[in-house]
Image 1 (spheres, rainbow, N blue to C red):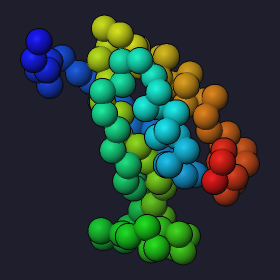
Image 2: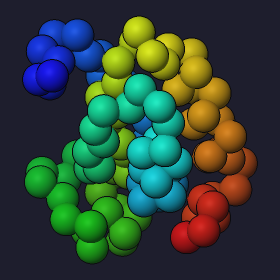
Image 3: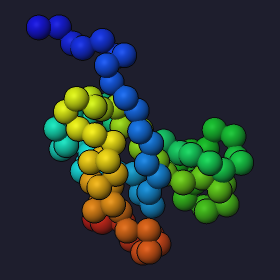
Image 4: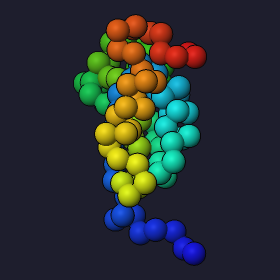
Length: 96
């Protein structure tokens, strides 16, 4: 069996205090095909991890999730995200 055509997948972006912990949680979800970490928002062009860590770029760490909506819904992914990320605890996102 070959891989599915990319048009069968959907994308969702989630911003968190730290993308590594959230990414590891999403990688365990059945129906998640791929993840990519990066940054969203901000005004600094092409920021590095070190740039973002200064807190002056305005960026948030984010994860792009490619998923199969026939296996997992966006609502289920949102629920996973809410369990993995607590926005009320700045700089303390899970194991980081």
